[in-house]
Length: 98
Image (tube, rainbow, N blue to C red; front, side):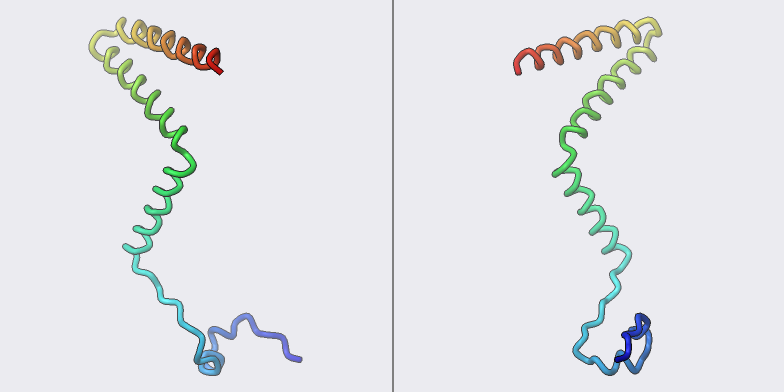
């Protein structure tokens, strides 16, 4: 018995011998990109909503602190410290409620 050749798909005679086999069509680059973006969007919605929520929350707080720092330099650490106390208070209240 002859072992199957892994390169038989490249051979024209092997391709002609199996006419019922369907060809795989290459996707256009735009279609590949669109499917990739859709898969990434689905994964973000399904698996990472809490992570994205935390990233956006702390990113927003950091941008507020940076904005205060650019207006007046001593105001940045003051606002940052106040927000840190507020976030720690929220965290402790959440842990107590459980």
